[in-house]
Image 1 (cartoon, rainbow, N blue to C red):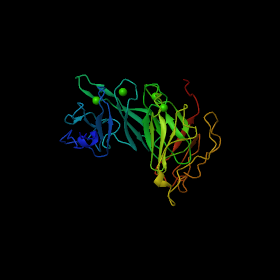
Image 2: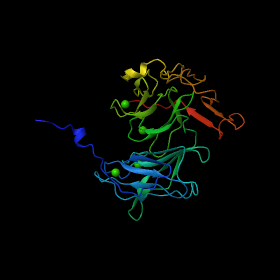
Image 3: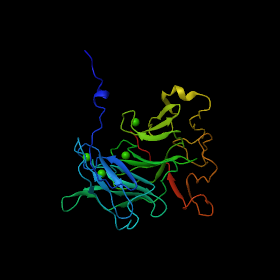
Image 4: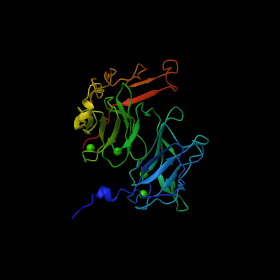
Amino acid sequence: MTLTAPAQASAVLEQWSPGPFTAHISVVAGDVNGDGADDLVSFNTFNWCNKVLLSTGSAFLPQKNWGCDNSTFAGMGFRGNANLVGDMDGDGLADAVIVRLPNPRGIFVARSTTNIAGVKTFGPASNWLNNTIAGDYGTMTADLDADGDADVIGLFAGVAALAARSNGTASLPLTAWGPPLRGDKASLAADTTGDGAADFILVDTTGVRVVPANPRWFDTPAQWSTTHRSTAPGKPSPPTWTGTVSPTSSRSTTPTCRSCAPPARDIPPPNRGTRTRSSARRRHWPRTWMVTETPIWSR
Ligand SMILES: [Ca+2]
Ligand SMILES: [Ca+2]
Ligand SMILES: [Ca+2]
Ligand SMILES: [Ca+2]
């Protein structure tokens, strides 16, 4: 008897949507209607709004317009440096989230809701955080503190990763969440340990490292897998943290990251300060940081 491998048997791609799907900027996935199936959300320019393809579990329904914030973002579109979805208020419905610089800056959340006509849509966007968390090396949503709502984390060059945890209605002040590590191929926040708190995943050419949430990301990364062929001469070593920031210390000194530091550039102050255009000529915006070390939850 000859058995057919499942992967071979299901190798034909299924057409889930014939289109159209308006997606000028980006497309992300999340369960915006809370039925357990992830849907697709597009971010667009000008007043093209967020388009959504709802999943039936075996196909996508035709795209629907899930809203425009014409009050704050008229003419520019609801889009930012990072365009994300995450259940920021913990109601089981993924919300649309943008993280912006320079103005208006910070975290803006358009909650998934049902309007007075009974139509599911994203509501008007509100500013959950007026601070700089659009990371130099990425901005992500994940449940960092295992309380059921999505938080936002930015990865920066030379300074700590900063977290803006959700309290359900707004983002808490920025907190240093880990040293400025990053994978040389990709960096992700995902709960790989299964305890509900997002861990830090560093994908290198040499393998994958994981920093389990404990509760933040200051532990030494554990090597979870190794790519043997990447040890060939000439392959770059993954970035390593050589700074001295600890979860309980006040960040009175600027942390350093020798092997993962980018080319010479202005490094923002670790705790609080304002950059002006003249002192940060490489940037196109003034950067203001207000970082707190506390509170940190206990589990
Ligand atoms: Ca869904
Ligand atoms: Ca929600
Ligand atoms: Ca959370
Ligand atoms: Ca975890």
